[in-house]
Amino acid sequence: MNPPGTPETDSQAIATLRRDIRDLGHKLDSYNARMAGAMGAGVFLLLLALGGAYDLINHNTSIRGAIGVSEAAFRGLVIALGLGGAVLILLGLLLRWRRDREQETKLAGMEQELARFESEDRPGHHPGS
Image (cartoon, rainbow, N blue to C red; front, side, top):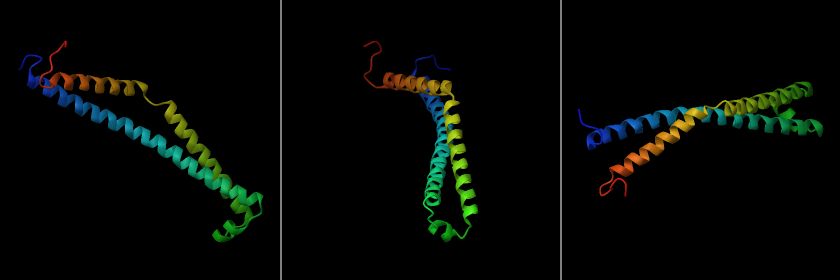
């Protein structure tokens, strides 16, 4: 076993730290992707609902006629799209509110530690200078 501060130990520590950063970063990115997906889908559904509501208000039958549904069915579809969009946006906001700030802080600390290790590992670097 090598004493602490030897090049082999430092390179093992750097490799382990990089792996841990990659794993934690992937976990946080996956969570953020779910949050963004919910928000994006919610906005899309709300835009569809708004377009349908505009057509209902103006008595425009082109969209309703193109998809071949009655006015009552189209109204129900518009309401369902609006509710679905609102629920997805609320889900995205809930995911944002419940995100794990401790994990985010831990990742930032690990990245700083890696930067410190890598700067100490550079040739010609003298600690304390």
